[in-house]
Image (cartoon, rainbow, N blue to C red; front, side, top):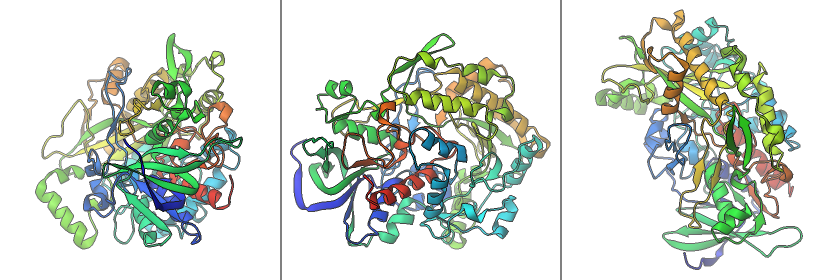
Length: 613
């Protein structure tokens, strides 16, 4: 790679690595103090003004686009037919807020209190609520909410934050029927799912700017209003390769800068106070290991000098337990998994599938540009049901599957025990959702049926919210431009699989309820011929994906429990290296994670500004 070029002028008080969701929040908040300088290095470019990014319903155009998507894949997954699963991650200013479906969900208050219970004082529901409110401007009035049967609670929302939060400006004609279908099965309508209780069926709030009806990203919400500040500089096209450290002392090593590649040349940016990694759950452990922080065995196998031995990096906690006589290796990486369920609509009903027709798509784009109305103003997801286990499964199979014999695990790390114990406890809690059923006004890709021209479809995303599957992320080379090995170990246990089998059985009750039955012509996938559990399992394994919410690869846990960062998000063994992104979340939550990451970044900025080290 060569020797880094040192530019004396390229030095900042704070160097933020990664201009994604969390990185831009932290950087712009720190730059509110005119006496400090903040530098951001981002591998991608500023894509936030691209119409394909700005237009909410065109979200899928960012997937597999190398300008805005890292385009990761998992290693072959043993328990899902050896498939390599696509893992989009946002690249460029705004990160994954350029790719996501703009949903601003929050988990149950109990789950945020669990952060504190796992050894992080001051990280609890009241604290998260404080920063949810600080981050957002919720602009829906009671009149706006009435058509959705929503009753916003003012105490749950912010009114002056950078992030726009509105109810969806466009919904499918089937939206009210979906709500009625769940209600007919005894699922309660939740008029305010953002106030610490997200169970029931409800309409999601979305990160869309209310005036322009364009995507709300961390770039549009945080960076654009602050980009002209003289004490804030963003360097795009800068690919971080390692963190540079001073010689160690009794207080730990100090991060003094970051090395990066730009235009095929190596450069260095110096940090006078702190380096902050916001490179997301897949890249953060890779950058730590490339910098000499991680498990000694992994580092030495790639001839990387050990700076700080920290086995929790990338979640290399190789733990074994017996589940139904099968030995399984567990680590900490967690994600939300999902499986598609798709129905064909009766003639006369439309979905976003009409946008496959070029003329209709052009007409919708014209309407969007000229009037800011129509299908393109929102993603095709709006009605959600978040269900505890007792709602969709009562045969005891899921609970039986959780008899994980963890008491004999041969590891010094307690974190794995603690997170599993929490999840087992939550299985029996009628207030903690384990299943997300999200209505999607379009066809969802599956292996059973391809979309037919001229037909419309209506689907449900069946999402596993608290998977017992655990995986890991590690370097496979000392070459920083190589992708890391990402192994989520999807469906490596009977619990997760049984939840998804139960989900298909339950959603069949929803779509055949009187409220929806008249609009749906037939079940397209998995199809009515797929009935036995063994057949459902085969369908799930052939179609399962992730919802792109990876967490936990640099967990905020006590060091003795296998943690990587402390309660102030400082990396153990360092004086001034912090991590601020989804990798610090210690246990998966029942929410699309973006609003939680905004709150984490807001709190992190306050911690840094207050001088808590």
